[in-house]
Image (cartoon, rainbow, N blue to C red; front, top):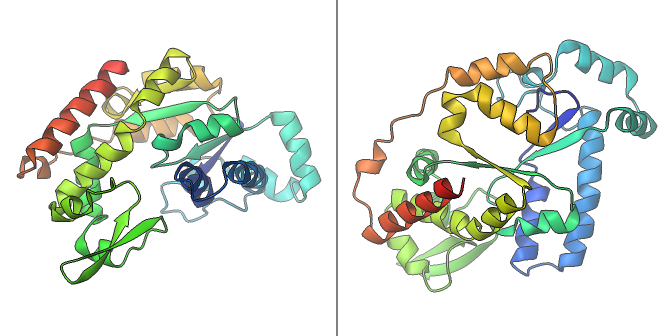
Length: 283
């Protein structure tokens, strides 16, 4: 989508993720959070257009070279130098700002409260596959929970002569149970907690036609059709690099999840199966 004409991509901006989270958890006044968010998004859009908030690292998946061609990049460097230039650019092109965010599903209503015309593209994937990726990245290893790297809200919890940093999405009273899980089971629990709290909201958005749900496996198997669906929904048109991006997707394959065959709590197994059923049937 970032390759399309007049589409600006912001790859996981931390502020856009943390404000809905803190507001939803009651850690910050909702109205203050909304004001900060709206101002942040305005500045983010301006700086992205000026190429101040993009990656020029060639090896990054989100590098600007995969999204805009050399002519567009050169034009922005040579013609856009001030806020007034950006203001004129926005008036002429009416760009769409694409926020690529994770872990915000439980607080999705926040975005519509701040920006009523928000459009959501919800990419869903089998819970066990997501958990496998989290496992491979070591997100919830003992080391990570003892000395967390991710800047997110945590609850300090003492157990087994250690201080653990419990993620915000662990239910009150389930801290010990979460820590007793294997590292893979923690990843499964994480997916369940983040998805389950947002299912009702997603279903309502689907009914109101203000959400587009995309199944990850369908994206890999038929990227052209999925792209057409998304571009129709967002009312965007392909850019010079769009076909190249689609061809890259065609070369991807769904990885076989070897971890899924490992022992897992029956309760977690049932939760994932139920959530998968709800999500894919609602699509």
